[in-house]
Image (cartoon, rainbow, N blue to C red):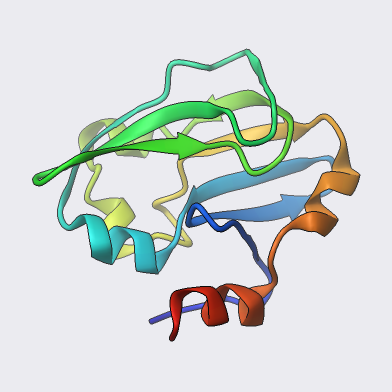
Length: 126
């Protein structure tokens, strides 16, 4: 399993890559393996401010539908357009082309409360 050290992680299996005052968010390699084949991503919070730990969308796999939780308070700027036609990018490239949303951070200090790669690896027992 892959745990990129430049990312931050949540106990709910989302990752966050900060770039200045913005960030990209997706689900972890562990999460996509647990879910199985991803068939649909639904994010209905575009343009909205979403508080930390609130649901910002759902991910649908062949077996189940799971909520996506916002790792930090942020405004959703963009939903990855590539996922409309290729939701399987989440399975094949969860930390790259499989990102789900781009956000503007409301309170960048909240990033400090997220797990680093080692902490997340310990959480999932890898």
